[in-house]
Amino acid sequence: MLAPDAAAKSFALPASDVQARVEPDGAVAVTERITFRFDGPFEGAFREIPLRAGESLDRITVAEGGRSYRPGASAELGSSGAPDTFGVTQTNKGVRIVWHYRASSEERTFAIGYRLSGLAVAYDDVVDVNLKVWGDEWKTGLDRLTATEVLPRPPSGPGYRVWGAPAYVHGAVTREPARATLVATGIPSHQFVELRVLFPRSLLTSTSRARVEQGNALPRIVAEEEAAAAAFERGREKIRDALDHLPRTILILLALGFGPALALLAGVYAFFGRERRIDYDREYEQEPPSDLAPALVPTLLRQGGTVGSLEFTATLFDLIRRGRYQAKPVTTERKVWGGLRHESVADLELTPGSAAALSPYEQDVAEVVDGVLAGGPERLSAGGPERLSKFRDRIAENRTLNSARFKIFKAHADHAVKELRWFENSGAKVLGIAFAAFALAAVVMLWVGIDGFRAVAPSWSDVVLIALGVCAAVNAALLLAGLTRVRLWRRRRPGADLEAERWDAFRRYLTDFPRLQEAPPASLELWERYLVYGIALGIAERVLQGAHLLMPQEVHNASSIYWISPSGDLGGGASALAIGDLSSGFGSALTPPSSSGSGGGFSGGGGGGGGGGGGGAW
Picture 1 (tube, rainbow, N blue to C red):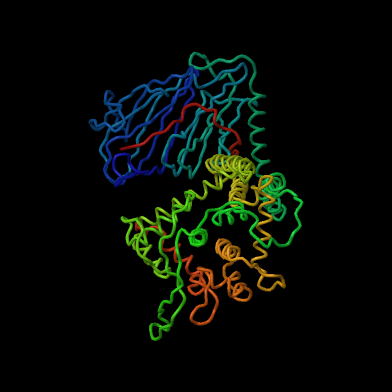
Picture 2: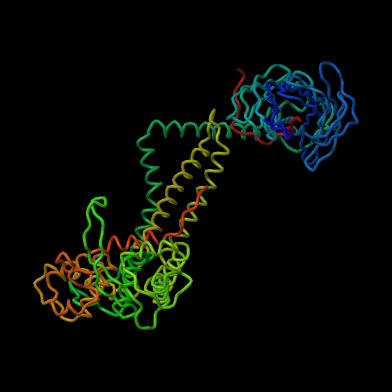
């Protein structure tokens, strides 16, 4: 244990020898010989002795090597005093004894003596002396403990019994004609040890310093100790049975670890996540089912999520289609083969167009584009033309400002989705409450189980608590994973489910129509809407393929989005530059700048004895 005032020094407790003598009037005189092994300089130590109602303590002495310490010194923890002195004070728990000395990297043994009154309980037939010979307030473990309790005179008859506690401490007790002895080893910190002795009441000449209780107690106390020992043994039998039948144990744990969460997830899906049956059986929709903005369609189809660069790109092309920006087909020289060759590729040159009423998220896109066309983030008035192939670099030049605009774009789009009230989220509440319950249960059970677990003699209750805590943690993890699967607990509201089915049919049409033997759309507006929605849905290349095969030449000539590239391929800025690359380029350019940083064993009971407490040194 580290001393409280300096991390450089510490002490260990190699041994403690406790001698207790029951006096004829029922008092218990105790002498504790505690050995400290100091590493570093020390000058003080203490013992805290708790007292219960009706108990008192007197005749306090401190000695070392036959030399008695003088009383009257300070009893404050951490205080200084003359060597070979001690002090005593009352605390809210009992009595504190503090003694002063000088020691440096050596072994010292101190003898602390006191008399306890009211500890022994005198019944009509027996006297019960249940003494904590080592307290649970010690923050340092003890290597070896010996304790002896001497009776007023040798007893006779069945009323003389001895127990040690608790069972999970490695130790043994011995009953001799006029004394009981306890030996224990490897006592961890914060672990008490009790020595309980029953002897006939006739051994006392007076009960003036004992607590008197009416009635006979021998059968009851023996039954309590035997029941505690039997319960502990049953626990050990259960542990052995679980280990002997390991496959069965594993199956039970798997069922407890996965079963409740899986059943809950299945129930949530059945009641809150599974889409309702609707009267719709069309495979394809040849036109967009509604005027829903392209930035919002993917969210409807995937039942949530956050908009990204595809939606941003689709909104840009929708603004071009609607005249907010004018696009002129041009050619741009592009380096290939590491700059060894150049080739001409189709590009779009954008200039500001007519003013139009925009939704908040469309205005966010327009602000990014206006900043590029105006030549800088501080001049957002109409400016000169800029080629689409240059947009990524121009956006990245003002990454901080544009990433903030992109974040606002996503927030505005998410707000627009919420206002449409497409989804029912009751299942998420159920899963959230269940997750919190399982997580809390896991923390509590693991905390209690691990805190009480003793490797030398584990109790069945602690093992069960730890196992159930792990199972609860696994269930919580499964529920947390379920919360990330939106389709498990969310479904669309009536009306939104039909709209989603129609948009899904339109997506199938855009994906398949290059190979369908159907009449292609004839209007320029429809063709351009195909491309805009194709960008949002991530299938723009399929739309461009269909346009290359099916678009009438006169429609192509009127479009500012589709044109013939220098290589003869039908496409546009998006086609020649690759929409996927364009969208990912926007995404990277709009990302915020990165930042860096042999008489018997111990019984199963215990915990009811007096005395004990703890101590320490500085």
